[in-house]
Image (tube, rainbow, N blue to C red; front, top):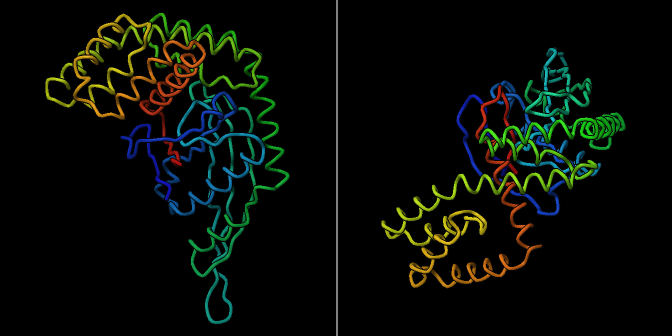
Length: 312
């Protein structure tokens, strides 16, 4: 069952995400409801809307993420009124709803496309009427498809017109030591943008500086884990240190000291890591994956007004 992750102005309830590596760089949207929706509408209804919108995105070549990567599909679910109609053995609730959708960039609040649709549902209770209205929403609705197409076109045009500005801003963030925020901004650039390769190169540059910043912290953490005989955690901490960071040699040395105390699977993992270090293409892929993780962690840590994201 999906879980609701309420973030931004309140603590995260759940952590975790999944992502197919082949999705990296494609247009990705997080379906983000408002906090008010979470408190006023049954979670099952939100999940149903999420499912329909996820299918809509998939049908149109867009990835629906379970985390905020900077680009949002934000629904707004407004109940216009409920009428109680007499009929037969029991009264029937007739509920009118307005569904509004925005495609937007979270950090800049730039809106690429908007959509509004009136829905109506009936049921023995208002909640059942709302559920019935949501059931009428179709991922094959031509109006919804047109909304997405316009959104993709405007999103593409935005990145084409502003890519240099975005990368300059990312560079400024990096220079001021805000590496996580810099990487988050860079990783929102979709694969369809002509500057995508330039953005990837910039992200690798920023990531190396980020590694320089955190490697000493990782070494200290690993030493504490070794002191407490938590060798498995120490190994995982050390394995995250990049080969081009200032702490790479110290990391390898510490791993050798705990070699006899880690599992066979962990030794196998380390041997594979060494092979990757000697393969430039594999190493770059690994770094891009690590950069994505940093970007996701950054967005999760930020406090932005009233958003919840359904985690898949």
